Image (cartoon, rainbow, N blue to C red; front, side, top):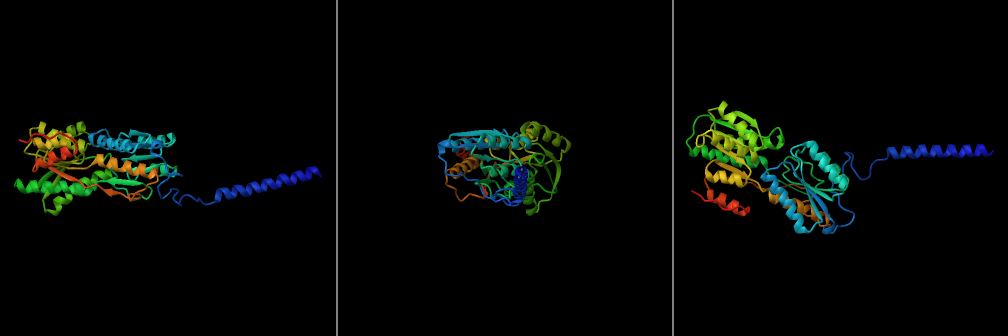
Length: 355
């Protein structure tokens, strides 16, 4: 009798266990949508004190633009009195970016401000971080559309900025009396960030088309770093002696392109137009080696994103939550060198002599 009763109890427990297991595996999630990700920013259970907050700031390249952005992350964190700002660099490597994000999650950081490599690939790791309670702010984030989960984001309008430079090229073409088909070379960084890069030269071409310029893209190279751009654009000039205009899509490409033209003895014959503002780029404009470039504000983006991030963690979310804010570009041109010097002074760079 005892064995029979014990057997009945065990059988009942087994049945209950099966039922509970079934309920556990089939129950719908209550904290995330069907996609598996939270759609709003991860907020701490209670507002944090600044002195307890640890945040990370991540960029993807070791150039002046990204150094300025990193400095913005650091300065904003220091101003707000956070415990620590950890700075990282993904070095143009998507897997390293994901590894950095996962490392910061495991280290228990409270938030990450990041200039991501890709709006289509980076977003998955960032959403996973948010799911795990790490708040996310974006910088330099063109191409992102699903941003409901971020505490704030800042970006340049890459196509609009490219068009600003293209309009400067149109003016140069007309002022220089160039006629016929204008031969154009492009130095892009499609191999690194194709979504962003193509918007920039797409905007440049928009301006040429809208002005009715008869042009032909005679060569396209990809080089985002100064040294590689110097080599590739030198080869491009050799292979295409008819080149008249070059548009480079980022800082390193712009500097390398201008150096290639100068070293080839083609200054005044080939006009270089670029993207980004920096000490070296503005010096090249004032020296006459670069015709024009559109400047972004990486430092300001870094400060704004980190400020949004820390304020959110302290229980003070701003109007930036779930949004991307456009940071307008500024044309720096050899036709107005005084304005170039003003930009330098505004960005803590010394004024340069103008001949």
